[in-house]
Image 1 (spheres, rainbow, N blue to C red):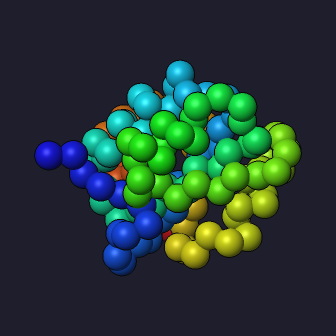
Image 2: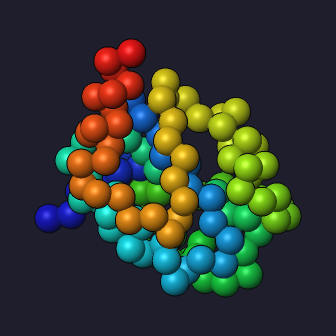
Length: 117
């Protein structure tokens, strides 16, 4: 069974922010890698940078637990992240490129390192 993450996760300690622009060809692999994470206490916020492709539809259909924030214009990676970071609630945030395929221990090791400091 696939793990779920996102809006309905309780006791969340980490939020992953993933900006995308017309990236429906790379998002599936990235989101599947996040579902395979051994660390479970996280949410995923997808930030759509005013795409014209099918990335938002793909996420809404296949990953309804991912919160989508649609921006009215293409702001670029840094500006899009900055617009969203103001509203993220968990104490820790990870910025993830949508073409990344994180190892299943990525979040576990990241949180362990953060907790050590």
